[in-house]
Length: 117
Image 1 (spheres, rainbow, N blue to C red):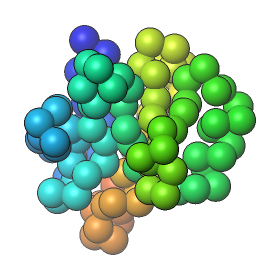
Image 2: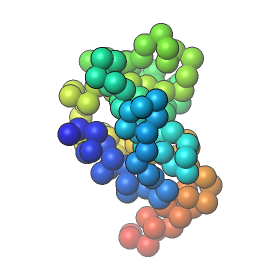
Image 3: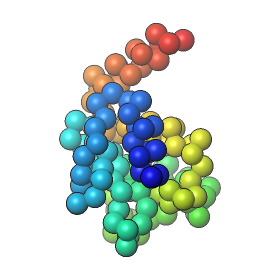
């Protein structure tokens, strides 16, 4: 399943946990929503994203990134997991993770990057 692949990538970051949101599978960081799989009828993955990044994604790949009226005022973007470039997902997830992670988790992650260099 594609959502399992998203979870696998997200688990690279400290504090990530599988959860549920609005009755659907979700990824959270210390109980803060990072992303959630929308219902089958709705489709897509809703993921935290700042408005500037969202505009760039919408323009770069409108077949993959989109919003609905519901998400217009929320700092989130919807991703079509059938058309997304999976090599881009680690960066997309990291940017979302940094928006919801605590400063301590960010520091922990950056320290782990420095150790691996």
